Image 1 (tube, rainbow, N blue to C red):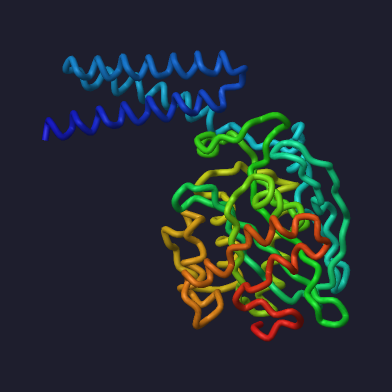
Image 2: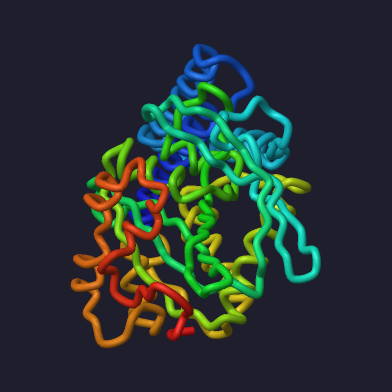
Length: 341
């Protein structure tokens, strides 16, 4: 028991040392040099406590670390997300909006023309959508070679008077970075970034990933009823409105592009179970497929193969019909009204 207690205390001291060092490195209110010094000082404190414990002491190093952690956590709990920083251009506006009867008005839809990964012709538009013509929902999964890791987007399609689905708006849950601030996956665990929901034209959001960043993008038709589809769209806008009023931190696991959408879906569809694939967004299509959300009678592998739009997106780069061309051959896609709803 004594050996187990010593091992547990050492692991606890090590965990507190590492967590505190990373927290200070990412959130200490100073420049990068002072952040590094603060993290180094904390790691030194943790190392001294561990060395003290190795020499046979238990109470002393435990009390020192406990008091230090209490002070650190007191500071940590007071950290609040911001809403008025100098945001990067691509996350400058959230997907806020409101209803006017059966019309949905989005205040800012991103319509950038990306010239490179970091440079674009900036454009935001106010757009209106007829909720009665909401006809489709698609899931985009964009990966960059890391197993199980991907970014997901939800795209809602609206039909014209002839029933052709030719107007799309994509929603993306993203990190809200400050201008010139690089993304850090580790920083996403430590209140480094705020959370953003962005509405964008597909010629912006999809082309950025497939054509500019060279990511592999797969499109899946999602079989969601008309009512549920409408409720999900309105829930995303409502959540964006709430973030505008009450900002919150992005978190790499608990508040990201998958888990936030799952939380919204649980309000609409009761009984959706938790699953490890909700944490690994690249595996999300498998979760949706297993719960009847994708085209029936087609294997997940075939849906992925036929839904790989990367080459079609590159070929349709400057085509005004970009959204329709990338859907050619995608299982479940119909050029007209939605018989699957």
